[in-house]
Amino acid sequence: MIRHANKYDLPELVEMMRDYAGASEVQVMKKHTLQDEKNLRNLLVSILAGRGFILVDHDYRGMIVGIITPNIWVSSILELRELAWWVKPEYRQGMIGGKLWIEFDRIAEDLKSENRIQFITTTRMETSPTLDYTKRGYKKLETTYFKE
Image 1 (cartoon, helix red, strand yellow):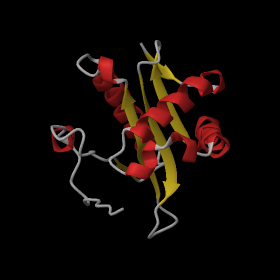
Image 2 (cartoon, one colour):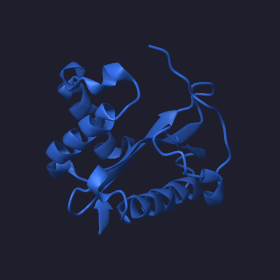
Image 3 (cartoon, helix red, strand yellow):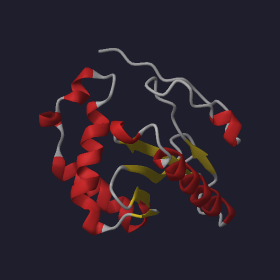
Image 4 (cartoon, one colour):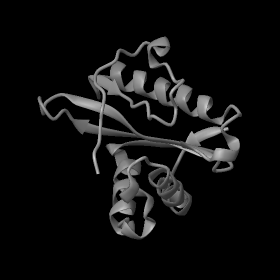
């Protein structure tokens, strides 16, 4: 069962966010000691308090985080960004990730219909090369590169 996370889920959310960062291709992200837990908790609390939403499955096998932010080019435009989509590796062959995404997209469309946001962005990580968001109605916006 997929549900909205709440403040009581913070320990599990922090742990999943650490795992998410640790799986990054950016090597410095893999070092958990560099992560500022207070900052991370503050971010998660602000999202839970209305700056977006976080969905989890009832057994904490995965999560998806959406954050509402002003667009960097036109600050009066609000966008929903998929900030993190994480499924524990041992559950990735199952249905958890798909169920999280379907609910994320449903809520995103509701926010758009209510005019709380004007558009939705998501990211396909290099670790998930087979994801095709165009099948879900999304258009490619940009490609992100990094250098260490």
